[in-house]
Image (tube, rainbow, N blue to C red; front, top):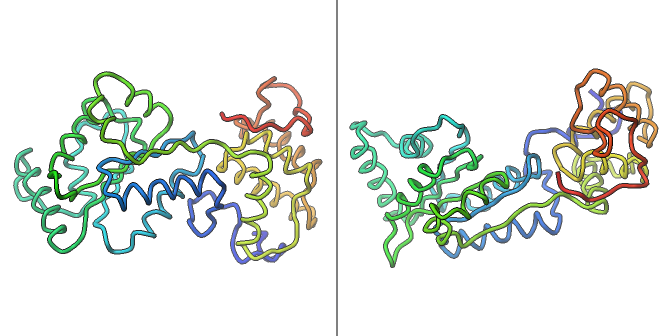
Length: 294
């Protein structure tokens, strides 16, 4: 809608997790490096956590791109509270055809696939997104699946991705054995104000525009209301660009961001952006921008 007006080749703040727009903040770069190290060093289980919208999925997609065709990758992304078994979803995610649908038959099909891939020089990586939704029983099932590995050969690796509640579960006594197998581990925190500024500039640059679009005060207000969460930053920046385009303005200032917040909050559309100090009151001063996680 506004791309041509600002000279963008693509939408800079699309909500889809496009690795091409990955901003290498210190922590996101560290997360990617830690996961790459865990995978390359044959860690049996790796762990990536972060708040909603902190950029976990984008980091994982960049990781998978870096692996190339050296791994058979299965992605389980639709976990929910009624999710009652891991093995059928693991088989489906890897495209394994199991003629025998019994638990033993599925396990044999899974084992045969993993070993066959290893004989071709490929390890198998099972990625479980939103893993905080899994019960203790299902997380223990993942640990038991990892027993397919021998002392000499790691043929199956698992990456658990989830919100901070996943760490709470792994600290429980019931999952001590699983937690002890986690050797690649990172928790994504929200962006600081300086990182938010760099993040916005980075995405605008990748989209093909070299001119500054957001004023310093606009960025400070966006950072404060989004609380440094990349997904919320994207949403607020995208809306601000729409409003700027409607007014035929090539720059977004603090006043315009306030206008976006006030008008959208009237319709209860963006309650996530209300000030922490007063959920129904006027916007807080942008001069009080903080880097506080949700």
